[in-house]
Image 1 (cartoon, rainbow, N blue to C red):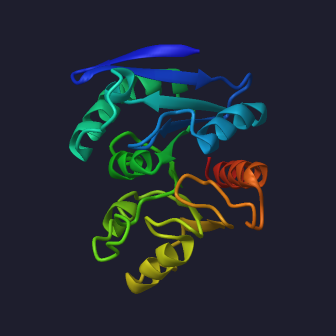
Image 2 (tube, rainbow, N blue to C red; image 1 turned 90 degrees about the vertical axis):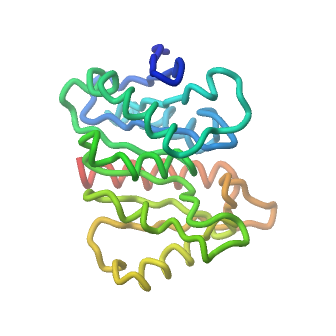
Length: 220
């Protein structure tokens, strides 16, 4: 089901995969270089409704308009926040989790408290620009006052799972209950794997679905 999502920045769009007897709603945003059909997002949207989780994938206005370059983070947050009442109406009082991949994960972290989310799911959180580890975005990952799941490939040039964990340790937040880092063996930032990787593409999708579902069941 597709729903138009008007905002002051243009028309966004929600693609909703409904659970027949939903117990929670997961609202996901896409990355700056791709849309809602990324493999991990589609895997979650296909499988979670079978387990009672409605999945809402949010296309930002710039993507719906056919533009190839995402606007600045502040604009992404505006469109997301202006769509929150519509998502809340869809949720109908059920626990709302937010998340996304890459830039979408950043948006979810920055706005989680404002939209009343009970948890955050980050798929390939871009900890830093490639080759610039000194420009850490750890502060955004630490913003939510709710549990956070981070699914991170161990070949991610934006910061692999080991680096994310190390940054948490350095910031003395590694022991903070609610921040969970799950490594995806052999995966890069797009969750793609090599032929020599420990698991194949289907294995990556299965790991993401299993981890996200387990996380949701533990917090919602």
